[in-house]
Image 1 (cartoon, rainbow over the protein chains, first blue to last red):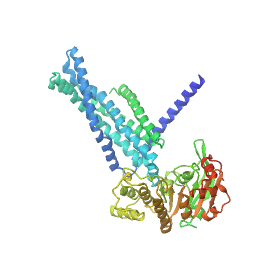
Image 2: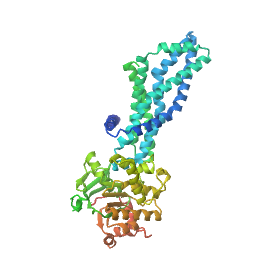
Image 3: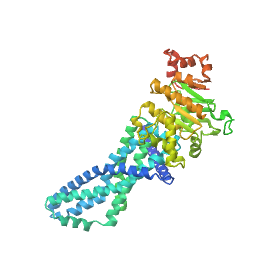
Image 4: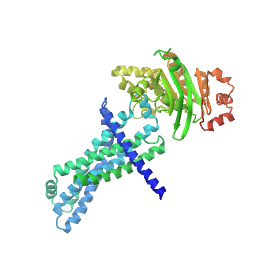
Length: 257
Length: 269
């Protein structure tokens, strides 16, 4: 019993220390962001790699999720004779919840893991030490552009996911005989900018910060071995996914979005 | 006195330095100094802390205790600002080259100049091509590091290490993984750089033949201390482990070499 308590205590202390280390790392990124040069070119490169190269997966998944929502929504609403509300159901589900969350999970799997693997490999092959020996801060040169690019692309990818999802729901709904006009009208009248669009943006922005921070931290602090990089990549996907879902609950509970 | 007014022994000096990684002691109370403008080679068994010595001099790791003096400045507990200033005087050739694999050869060499100088693009290109010529490479500007052979990668890394005209060049296993011809090329380059530019070169190497040819001073790290001397002095040294090291690559395997390889790091003087 005492051993178990001691283990629990040790794990709790380790968890708190780890949170502290991540917060300190986040602080280092912010300090680096305030320094010159501003690394605009590297930021744009990262936006391309993290964002543009994720476009296809986001579009395909958004379309598929929207189509499933349309199908499930149609079958359910038909029981109550309310199929005209399909646009509202699909739109609000995607904008308020599924769009930001699923985009964050997909981006974690595609871009977050790649970010961790790339930084971890740079550490393992002494590229980060090489930068240090050239008096170039690796957090400023490597980490900061990647973290900020993740924060920048997440709301954009989420918006794209939502648009594709709405299109998927529309295609299924129209296929099942729903009037295209009533789908769009229902969507337009139910969605508000203040509560829904801004809330969705806020969620995806926070998810972008979380994924950017976790993926860069895990890569930067990974063991400089192939096994270490592999473990760090797995940890990024697991940690970021769990943290996204937990934060999603608290954002929804506290701010009602 | 050296150019900056420091005593020769303060050019590069480790003073009672102890180093641990976790519970494992790499070395304790290690003290030696390296002469300015000369080529010094550090040899020793695997795990004896040779590369760690280079990383300590470069400020990439901090010692548990002791002082590391680089050009008169103690960098052992220095903050980032002091370290950056010290690193402006140091170039480092890493074992694997450590070239940024997302940048071309040209961009790899241009990076430190773009970061730390106000040179325009034309001047940077001139500097880059000058250094590439110095290491016997040209016409490879647009190649990525993964398109280079091991020897070429080492030479590009060497060109990058000297592009900011450092006064100290640290080389971690510059001959590892190279064929004999490439080994001789890199060795000749290091000697040439030392003679032409007067750079202090510190090499960590297992390659005894190159060590004996190029070194002015050799530091042998042993499990219970260290031995420092010129190649001639060490060839006549009475410690059998030193002799074993210096004859090891002449196809004369020695029990003492095996012993040095497997012994855990112990206390040094």
